[in-house]
Image (tube, rainbow, N blue to C red; front, side, top):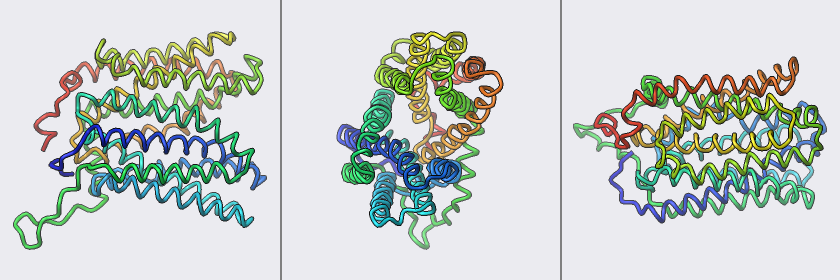
Length: 420
């Protein structure tokens, strides 16, 4: 990607934030409405679970090629196309629903295509942000981006989506489609870096462009041979596996251990989201005050201690406080880790490195759910939380070693080799 194109950081950043907020609210409504719609239309537990799984499957199938495309093409345009794809899929779903033609296979296909659009949008967006925000403001910018996504998706969107579904099955889907169109309009006004131009035919610089698989291999090799990027990627995989595993058994903990009603489950989930919002807003200031290494290792340690606390109690206030602390620490980790990766990875590799990172980080989540579900079934949900706490605390050691050993953690400038 060429970085010669002039950008206007404030304007571009605000448009990215606006697009992310619009898309997140719509996504939250879809996350709430799609399972409800599947249950109402299909009446089959396996088919309903298959539709839910289809929305996450593209991360395993397309994270690597999506990252490569984010480095080959203009990232802003790729995000716009992803928005338009998702809007069109939602409109077609509404049409099929209105015509009473929305059966299992069309709904499964729609869920899969929505997931494909999410993969393309996310890989391109995290690669685009460093080109519209000055390097010294990356952590603050990522913090605000995570905050609007958390508020829009996990707080506003899901609540509103569930309510609107009771008004009409098509209402949340149509509003979600509008949210993607608003996002696309905002993104069109961003002036970001253009892809490197192809050499003129017959020129001395002319050489065949690497194939897509070669681009993917280069991205995977780049991440795996860098000790710090490798440690961040593996740590993210462990964190997400533990987090989703704990989420998978959290409802069992609420019902069987805390003896609380369904309404309390939603309130406790909201406590985690509130912690995440707070963490995303203070992450930049926290890093400035104590440094990147304490912020990252401290975030991991906090998540580990919170898991152990839940595993050792049946008190509601302890579980609520621990879950809020987990949300806070997880968001601090995300903001600082993502900003660090954006700082040390050269622009031409950002898309592919993001794809590799997301593949490992998101690919472990189903495994975590299965393992923690098995532990909960045999020893109870508190044992599963305690296991997650121990695993997370053990992860502190290798990531701390990698962070302390690498001078780029404190030096925010890219090395001369990276800048090539």
